[in-house]
Amino acid sequence: MTAALASLAVLAACAGPPRNASGIPFALSASTPRAKGDIDSFTWALYAEPPTLDYTVAFDYPQNMVLSNVCESLLRWTPQLTTEPGLARRASHPDPTTWVYDLREGVRFHGGGTMTADDVVFSLDRQRDPDNAAAWAQVFQNVTSVRKTGALQVTVKLKKPDSQFPQYMASAAGVVASKAGVEAAGKDYGTSGGLSCTGPFSLGTWHKGQSIELDRFDGYWGRRAKSGKVIFRFLPDASARTNALLSGEADGSYLIPTESYARLRGGDAGKLYFGEGLSTVNVSITNTRGALGDLRVRRALSLALDRSGFVQVGLGGAGTPTGSLTTRAAWAGASERTRKRAFEGLRPGAPDIARAKALVKKAGAEGKTLTIATSPIGQDVSLLATAVQAAGTRIGLDIRLKSIAPNAFTALFTDPGARKGIDMFPLTYYDSITDPLDLLANFKTGAYLNFAGHSDKKYDGLVDRATAVDDPKRRLEIEAALHRRATRNLLWIPVAEWPTAVFLNKRITGAPTTISYMYYPWAADVGAAK
Image (cartoon, rainbow, N blue to C red; front, side):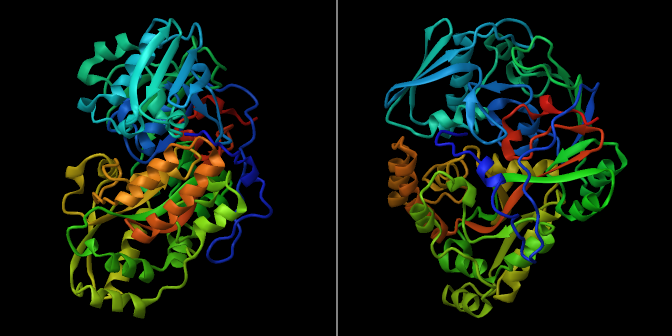
């Protein structure tokens, strides 16, 4: 998702590698070496099976990592985290509340037929339909109409200026699928059969509980995929995933278990790369009806957390402790003065147990019971939950762990019922556009990820002001004020910045190192290393 897209190639080429909590350097790579030729297939390890591949609810890693290679959007997020034309060859902005998308000619759907403006209108309207409970509905909150204005032209009218909407057209929010194909699938769309999309791969066989196969689409309008097939294997156990990578059972993977960094770096099976992730690790507050409804208790937990210790152990040393909700990379387009204002006073210090205890006592929360979700997805989740529990114990809170299976953990983001009985959970948030507002808008009243139901009229007003400004520099100045206010509220307790990790064995290369894999058809670039 990108409009003021400051190129992050600059970040990848920064002076010297970042350093983790213990001072050990880890380098950010701009990319992996380009493939030297085609391959028949490759296998990719995935930590969980997607519950569905319906683009309207693609809001987590497993779904998007697969879907990005099958379904395409009007615009495209690139490996450098900038935007370029996608299914729309051109996007124009004739006035502050109008976006016009001129479509590519001759784009074919996997199931047959050629893309028209009718398919685009249908696809975007599915996101807007309240009956679909679309994860991306918030992106369309200012849209008044999506109309066909030519055989290959669609015009979107907005209620008011919206700087974010055009950026999200490079994410799953802007996906285009065949109207005929989606309607034929009915309620089964996304869970069986094809996806009726246009990407370099089509959905092949889905072996429930085991794997998803993608087949190269020879009718693709763009650059032909280098691999004839991609096999995504579901390996929820972190140790099993690592063993599969080391043995060659899987050729590569994103979202590497942090406890496996040392093993993968030290072996000779392949190479572990780190790239820009636009990702922060947080503790998301989901229930403010109890003790966590008191800001003093949230502050106490934040003060008691050992962020440096978590980065060293929980993130395998590849990360940076932070007291900020956003990554610094998200502010690449801001002036030095604006960046300074955004991050002023947010540098995390060592745990302050005495001050945290005093806050808990003042709030009358001593001995209060709270529940945090955990999961064996990887130690970044499990050890953060444990770190929160330990911090709570030290300051007089009774924090209990509730373990959730990896396949069910993704439901915490989309299903209020899954969050019942849970007060908080570890949340790694990745920006879907290179704009801090992507994260900051989540705390607006009624926002999709505003799990705690927080409402602040002044905050809402700042979000609206920032949204209305097209000029990136002016918008980022408003977002700096938003950032400070959101961080003070601690509806998410920020813990660390976390780079993207990707492992490739010696057989393959070409995968991007950045978080672009969520919306960019990365698998099409993967081919033979030799």
